[in-house]
Length: 283
Ligand code: PDD
Image (cartoon, rainbow, N blue to C red; front, top):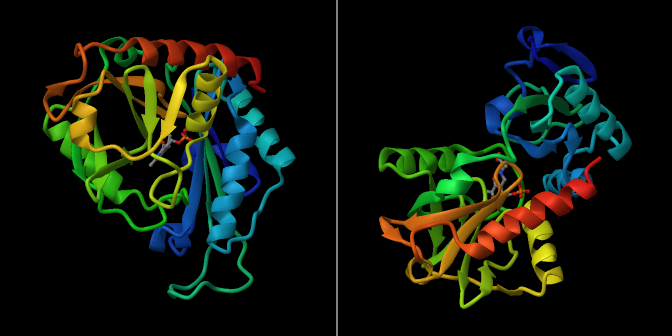
């Protein structure tokens, strides 16, 4: 089946989709993105992703090119046209096309690109097995709260993990874990869920917000604070969250088993609750 994608107001076959070589997204990574998951053909946490997109754009003094209603329409249209039951919708907004200049140009219109990716989401072998992570130095910039497309260091981190036989990398800044290459990081000790507090150092995960809300509703204890790799290795459980993995257990850090070395009870329960609850509000 040929994928239909969205480029600046038009639905086209993927091989016909074109963006200028002068697009600032291409030249400067001057753009932001969102990834929204699809379950049962419906969008998960659409509103949360729109709110974060609006914030990312405004932090970079970029014009918001699309209303929430129109964006929802395009998401739904793409899911429908591509018959996506489980997978993702990727959205990217760049500042637009202009002759190369470091200064932001005036009066250009943003480029908006969206496409779907089919992916098995609810049934995951990784959720059964658990992930191995390695720790790496966090060498990203100081505004990790803005969801920009400048993802080269996270790609390098992922490749460092793959090269050492692991699934992902947890980044460490000033001795404390910030987050995974494309997910938020958590440990569990004595039934307390511990995750770094929100700041410019991490992306404010939409899945994180939902999972912490569900954890609170289920009377679980949550502590938002920094933790070190040493503390993580000595935790009872570890896990990550993101729109593309939901809640995914971590069973090994830098070659050391976390807890029993098997996916933990709390991570498994949170994954279950997340899938159940989030489907209720999917649109
Ligand atoms: N990544 N931290 C980072 C650095 C991320 O890139 C992501 C998401 C998250 C989790 O955010 P959310 O729960 O809103 O997905 C945290 C997406 C999935 C990606 O880049 O593909």
